Amino acid sequence: MAPALAKLVAKALPLAARGLLTGYTTTALIPFYEDTTGSGVDWSTNVHVTVRMGSTTGHSYRPIVDTGTQGMVFSAPEMDYDFNTPCEDQGTPGWQFLSSSNLLYEGCWVPRDFYFNVGDPVNPVVKASVPILAMMYKSECPTFDIASTTGHCPNASVPRIANATGTRMMGVGWGRQYDGLPQGTPDKNPLRNIVSIGTQSMDPATAYSAGYVLDSHGLRVGLTDANTAGISWYALEAHASIAGEFREARACIAVDGATPCVPGHAVVDTGIGQSYLRMPAGTALRFVSGHSGRLVDTSAVRVDFGAPGSTAVATESFTLGSPGSPNVNPDYVSAVFRDPALTYINTGRHAYRAFVTAFDGQNGRYGFRSV
Ligand SMILES: *[C@@H]1O[C@H](CO)[C@@H](O)[C@H](O)[C@H]1NC(C)=O
Ligand SMILES: *[C@@H]1O[C@H](CO)[C@@H](O)[C@H](O)[C@H]1NC(C)=O
Picture 1 (cartoon, rainbow, N blue to C red):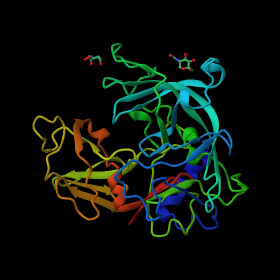
Picture 2 (cartoon, rainbow, N blue to C red):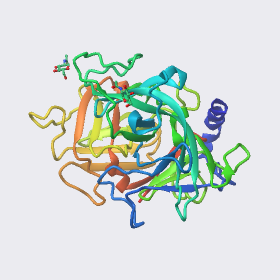
Picture 3 (cartoon, rainbow, N blue to C red):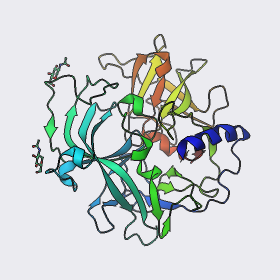
Picture 4 (cartoon, rainbow, N blue to C red):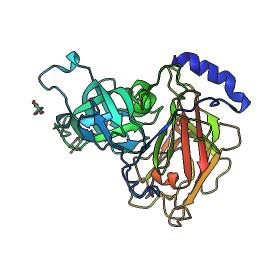
């Protein structure tokens, strides 16, 4: 299904994608656990959702919602993983590496059903079916090779903690395979593999457009004209080799008012409060002395989200040390010089104080609306 759709999108998008959601009506909110009052989260902490595994009466978990990764990772001893059967007989060995924290999760991808909104008086039950990484080993590996094809930390002295508990992540991003997540593919993303909403199954005949809106209340799965009203969209590039996948969103990045901005990619990551920046060698950056790679207060960063050469659909700008309103300042900005082709910013979660975003997995678009 996906490759054919990607082609369709490439043709349809120049028409500003008007009407792509006409007739689509199926949607459901998966609320953030932190939105206890219904007034929305303030993005000062991680956000979580409640989900049952296996069946609607299965164990209930509260994973972190992470747009910086794709795929679910739970500590194996805390889920129904069968330690008495070899991984190969129940799934596929694998790993996920988080380039922001250098955490390497090793384990076994096993297929499972997930149920959101069980017992919720308002929002219908949403069922997704995806493989989850049952994490058996956790390590902190700063020397990990993000191009690794084995998933092992090259430094054999790094402690590899067996059966570490407490890891529960729900990665709902895309396009991060090159950054240590080669197995973080669309088939692992619960929000891209929804089986049913309420009593309605998401077969091709259903008026369901795969994608989600992310706002301060939670994840609204199923795009409609109503829940995307006011969103400014731009096209995501198809991934060169992974069917149905897209590359990270495009953005043009400027530090300290430099012109022109430098084209690259961007991730608005719910999973971190800080920001990571990769700029071409020679970019003028001001670093805190003795704090390797951190930009000084008074550094000004501007991120124009949009297709290269086109008008930005949204702009995030901030000056470290001078919070604006809303305060989108990350906790800090960690910057490195890299190949210009790797120019990138992970804005961190505070950007969501200014924007509602929408990911359209069916039509290959990403969009923003000011809060
Ligand atoms: C390997 O890991 C050990 C333990 O964490 C650390 O002390 C050592 O510096 C690391 N070596 C390299 C080359 O990073
Ligand atoms: C992890 O825990 C399981 C279940 O208690 C046990 O069977 C397994 O041997 C443990 N793995 C390691 C490496 O200690």
